[in-house]
Length: 106
Image 1 (spheres, rainbow, N blue to C red):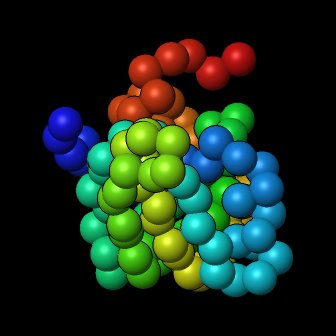
Image 2 (tube, one colour):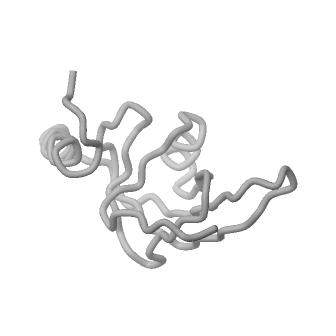
């Protein structure tokens, strides 16, 4: 059991529903497997499940726990700051593939 540190500039959604709630309501959360540390108070780039940069969000809470199924999970609560324009999205997406996702874009 241990904590995994997330990159300070990446907040990648695995669920379209979690991303939709953030963009629609201005606040939201995502659940990640394993214990992870997200920097509360920091602004980060949010990515879609398809690895496309979409918005700037602020991390407002991070809770790591063992759920009722015995799984280690981390819930990250965030506030929507703003959507990225197409040029910002393209640049951030390209950088993320080079730095974090370790794979070629299709």
